[in-house]
View (cartoon, helix red, strand yellow):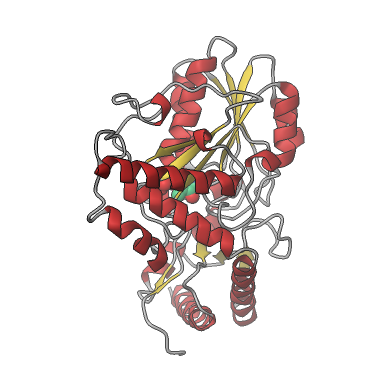
Length: 394
Ligand SMILES: *Cc1c(COP(=O)(O)O)cnc(C)c1O
């Protein structure tokens, strides 16, 4: 086998390594620049506040937003909760119907189910076999009392990219707010809030080579002005929408991480797409009975460049991963790994039980090399072949 440093990490949809350039930008703010950005009476506070302002401006500019539209949170989970529960609370007297999709992340689905238990009506749209919904499905689901639509930009398990711009046109025409979980899409494709037409948008630093525990919510300030009810109250930070002392190093890290991703476009997504396509080609040329889950790989508009989700027939995905200590992959979604149920996303695609259990997700990233891809092809091929041999003996 090719010589690579093991174990090899290919689980970049779950989290990513902090880029050394991001760490470098953050370090002074753990050290001598330790001020509270809310302290207005001394140098330490001013320095932190100024730097947070710069970071906010950088993020806003990259997304085509205004600085006051960026609300810092602890990550995309909190951003999703704030967007959905915060908007629902403000709009409850206008209507109680919310539309989303069956393959959303648990941090969207679980708050929506909670809202449903408290009296909201929820429509979860089914997806096609490729994992897609259409704008027409949204249009048909909107009712007189619909207040909110939530659709992710790119899916974390199968990398499918939803037609958000067209969905936004429907939402605008029908007078309904659109929330978008863009956590997996940011940094891998152009994301601009006005071009997409979103009203609320969640994202997170640790999926784009930034630190864990910091994210943001974009909240549109005009046409329409979106109003939210806060979930966390206290000192009134972030315009009262999210109290708590600002995570200064994290905010600086998020801004630097986004800057680096935008600087590396479009070359880096192209490099990842080539590596991903080589991975698929290598696996399918040496193994039979390998199924691609999600949309075709050749349509760059329909699938993230870094994602490959495959099912190996007659092999249990969990058993496969446990047999490969030198390669870090995941089955289903790590976000719900405490839950032994097969992936709700793959079930939403209509995959049979066997293929759902045999599925494995490869998430390529900035630090993966062509040698590592060759290593993964060889190791997975050997291991699947061995496991299949064992099961035919049994
Ligand atoms: C990882 C992820 C989240 C959760 O983000 P955290 O910052 O870890 O809370 C939400 N949505 C999607 C699509 C994700 O991939």
